[in-house]
Image (cartoon, rainbow, N blue to C red):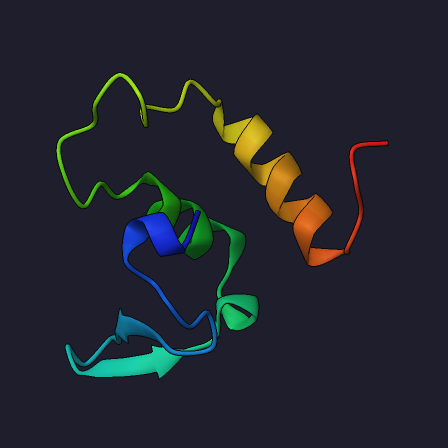
Length: 73
C-alpha cells in the first residue's frame, strides 16, 4: 500500500514537522492516526480498479496484522 502512495522505503517517509521543516521518519514510529492519514491521501484520481472500499477499522486491523507479522488465519 505504501508503494502505491509513492513511498518506496518505509524507513524514510518524508513528514512535515511542527516547525514546517521536512524530516524523514520510519513508518513504525508514526502514530496510528499519522499512518491512516498517509493511507487516506490520494496521489492521483482514484479509478474503479484501485479505489478501496475499506473502512477505517478495516485499515487499522490490516495495519495491526502487518505490524505484528500476523496473517488473517
